[in-house]
Length: 183
Image 1 (cartoon, rainbow, N blue to C red):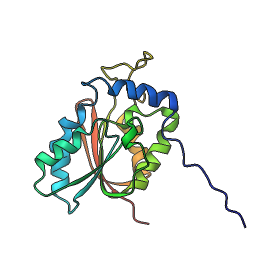
Image 2: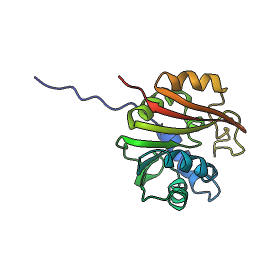
Image 3: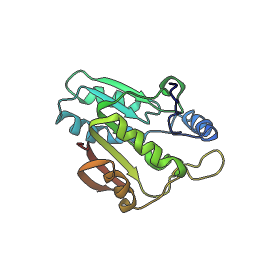
């Protein structure tokens, strides 16, 4: 009996991946994660986890900032489909940070990305979402925040996949603390 191999769902289109690679060449692109490092560190310190998956890692700045803030040794795993060295599908991890990423996802692929985020979050997650327009534009002229939806829209999608532990509004959006759903 032969097995049918299925391709994993697409998380990023090839043209968009190239646009994101271009944006990441700008040294000022992808700085939001550093501003959220104190929050992520605080949540991480309240857990037993010493491994972190930075989902949508960009330049890896969150990991660098966490190493300076968290008192115990950390192993940081980076995933970003637009960064060649971090583009392999990540393994599941107990603690997942997804900072200033989801609003950048292509609208047609958001459910695939959220499903993948669910797959890799086997413990706790800290996710931030900006609900309005970005200051930056993509090289093709579109706003860098491809998805500009209110918190309620996002919460419906997130709570379908995760147990919501914390929701907090922040300027320009919100952050959530989530746990994987028990089966």
